[in-house]
Length: 426
Image 1 (cartoon, rainbow, N blue to C red):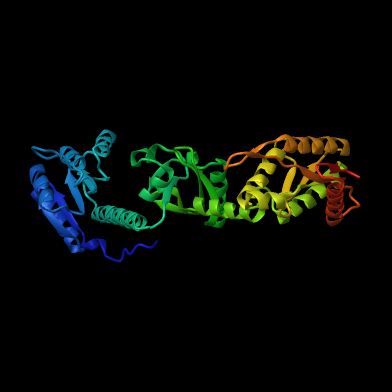
Image 2: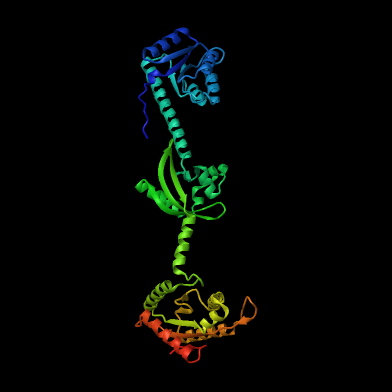
């Protein structure tokens, strides 16, 4: 940000107020000779009238005057919003500490003692006009920044680096976190982060790198809902305050869609359990974990007996319902560490980590009995029962995944050849 201050302060308009006509003329003459535009007032009343007609850039104000003195004139001008920013320099013969304190209390910007030293007068006038010009530019830049921010099409928030309090949020940001406009200035920015340590981490990134771009950060709304955002931040200075400017896009729906797609890529569309590829990845990961921890690992493959007959007799819709019911019945005995996958039409594989062979045999038989004893009600009336056949293996580390599947598959078909509705484990 750069400010153009090439316009000379000499072009500014100065109101000189003094009840001594000689002093008034001399001071105006000196200022005019140095390029300033001047106006004169002989007392407090004239001064207030002159300011009401046109605001000056600076006022040189005599303190001791008949009627309304300089302190009162200054107090009235500072009390009015339209004139409160006009810098006022007191001119007085009284150089006491008490007089100066009173002047600063009513709003004076500076004090020049009599007798006047014109080089000092000119220096103090110039200093105040330059300071005022910087102030005006700062206000203009602040207003320009506010207009730019208001035009932003994305949500943004500004918070104080020192206090952590929110300073400003546009309507899009307030709506995103369900915050009312009057609540903004009373809210800690930290309260909007789902993980409070994120704000300090991001602040540190900004301090070190000057910018944070396109980071995924979770906010929490005032209603307790998680809001996943694509987060950008930069430091700014507004006036003398260091602030943290954050712009973000709500990508919650996108993340939910990505998660749904990821789940869909790993899930069997009909039963909701792992598909063949996802089960294979899970099995390999469990095999590695079992090797590392020297834990047992068992594999059970099951298949619905006479499934083709179910489809032919009752239709494929009933066949699909039978598959979903099978998964539900198996799920009664599963732990969170177990994994169930569908690797074929009616073929399912169950992975049992940290399970000894005897325990796996008991579980397999329990599953078989539950399915055999279950009665499935049919939409058209009546009921149907089904059974399963299966093959069980204690999977050792010297056997590959493909070999393990081949072994349980062979045992499953041996169970079918032996009359079905049984689990073969050797």
